Length: 102
Image (cartoon, rainbow, N blue to C red; front, side, top):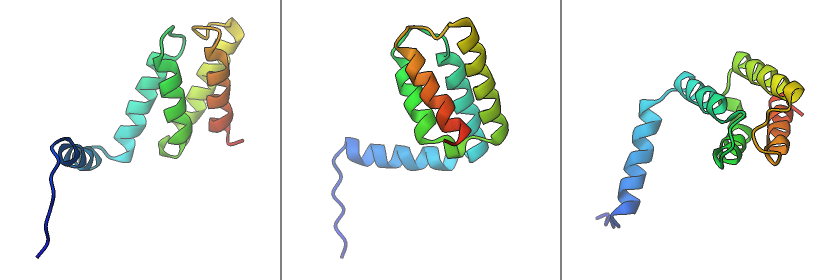
């Protein structure tokens, strides 16, 4: 006999996590990450660090086309120095380096 313990939020988070994995395929996750990137690039908000770290961590989900477009967008922002906040410059450089494969 198997006993299953359910602690409210733990049970819900497991179910919710499985739900999202079934709901979204790799292409849809790619699109979501591109949208998050475009939202964050040039913004003056905490979300830049969050999105930057997620892009670095999950870069394998991105298509080569998406990576190339993100690199172009970061390079464009580099030329205009419109990173958002000064502290965000290092984040976007790290994202670009990760997407380039270094």
